[in-house]
Length: 247
Ligand code: 13P
Image 1 (cartoon, protein in one colour):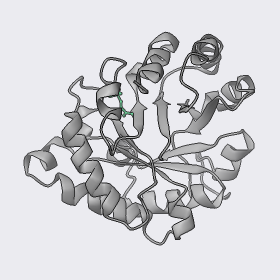
Image 2: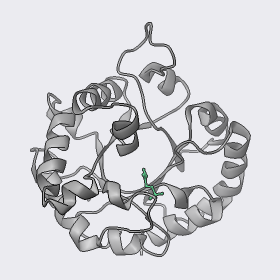
Image 3: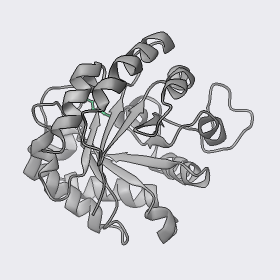
Image 4: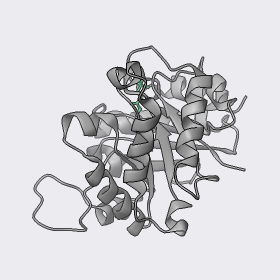
């Protein structure tokens, strides 16, 4: 059986102090989340150390929002896999649509980053998803399949077994307009079957996930949790969402 994961992507929100306040409030609430539900917090880079220090049990895992593909070098402003693992990071989001749209992360770059995450012993959360115009043109499947194949190209079967995927329709991110769960399930089943070896890989849905709608997603056979933006920023709200995911 695939594991159920609720991952909070804080994007460019929270200073290190604000992140620490979140964790202190969240940890007691997380005790009410069913144990089988894995919880991941992905703060900005500047808050990773503060959050890591407070996560003294593995009940809540630490994730980063991006990574550079080289281990070190002359890449001003970048952060490498060894730097993340040194801070206790276990997960790294790669290929988020905001990285693709605003920072030039192409399929080729997403592939390099995915491989780098794995080579550093971390778990990539590889995000794919279509824009509204791609969806309206009826090209959702072709687009997400191409993104998935490109990101995973060249990985061994043992590496593929260690990844997590996220399907985030771009038009559903931060809009309050979430994708119909059955429709997301169909796209995820296409993603799961487009590369051999993804049968046991968790696929998360992302895009306006809330405590009120997460259960409708996780009830779908292909959906193994949520990648959550706005609803992960408040400890009580995110705890409620994590509890609701397993109902
Ligand atoms: P929202 O949950 O705010 O729509 O963001 C989704 C997302 O982009 C998570 O990575």
